[in-house]
Length: 211
Length: 353
Image 1: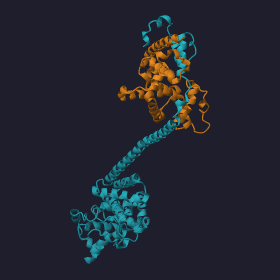
Image 2: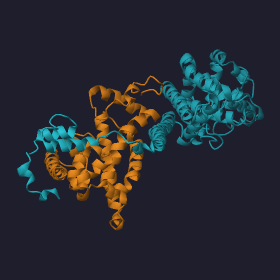
Image 3: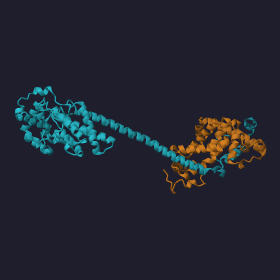
Image 4: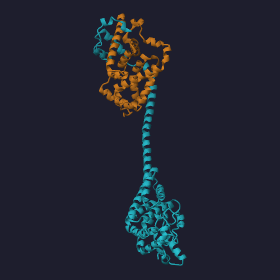
């Protein structure tokens, strides 16, 4: 178990220069120390995980369930905390595990919130969704993370959007997404290809109009 | 939605699987190969943009909750690990207790093989166990185990002795030990005044006479044996005391009193078994140090009881001659009855004719 002193191996990794998407072996080795510290309740290790995962999780949840994203994220972290002691694996596996929890929590929320059909859609949701009326003003590079994710979710069918979001926000490969969504890797490849084509078509149309 | 744009497939090159993987994996290779790829690359880069400060607003709260949940979970896990351990310990104790009970029963049964009635052996087993509890201050399991071991040793010892000597002699040892230990738990001084012995004028007359005669013949050996247990040297067996008293009451010597003794009377009447658990035991226990060692336990503090138990085991080995003597006597007097404890009355061999 990694200690809680200042000689933690993961301390250099905590610098902002480290890319969350990095899944090299060295990072996994460093992550093992971070994981051990987090399993022991080390605050810095937990912050390290939170800083790198929370924004991605919020974008993933916001894009699909904007009203409950914060609540679901809170429940998600609590679930992670209670189960992290039993987790074994590297950084990539950890991301896959956390996003699988997020997906299940989202599905649970949707099942239990049937009444949301009568809920009034918040104005913020419309703000995140690029509409045809605002296409001319669309500048992809200026989109925030949550806006970009919401644009993907609003432009694609739910399964296609989910595949792309898992791959982009979770930095997961085809096999990992297949396991999370309980489908075959081939299904994921086909779905992501259709999603990219549809998204490009929509963006092309909009951008073509812009140009 | 966008599937309705039929012109896209005509005007735009298809997205290869390799390009799709490059776009989704965040690689910059091929992102600018086509306008569509550039657009997708830009959108995906925005999705992966660094965290906005607003996205980390509640970090402190979640980290605190996370820490609390981790600690709580860790404690719960230790509890979950402890439970089976306690369960194992409880199971182990239960098994040890059951094993102790089994061994006690087995030891008692072995001690009672063919001689001692089972109620006596059960009492003996219980008393042996109870006797050793305060001595060694073991825990509940330890008590049973210790008592069982000692009892098993005694049972083994007495069983071995039974092979060498007659069964009545063996019964004497067992019952004397039982009664002596029972006396230890109550009051030794009370037992000193309660020793009665057989009625020399009754059915035990022949046996007492026979034992008395044998005792007189082996008086020297008995003295040697008494050297091994000095506390016996000044004590007179109650049965012989009773015999001498009966003879004196009749105005006769012991030899004269025993002249008309017939074995038929003793065989027809086993004696006053209702008075003492050792009523059926042979009466020459005082002559047999190995048999009387436990019987004299009331002379000593209860603290020495375990040692006496060991002595009874050891003396059976180091005083083979004693066993032999008792064998002789018990063979001669198979039906002699005597109290379990040797008793403190009398003056030992002074009553010998």
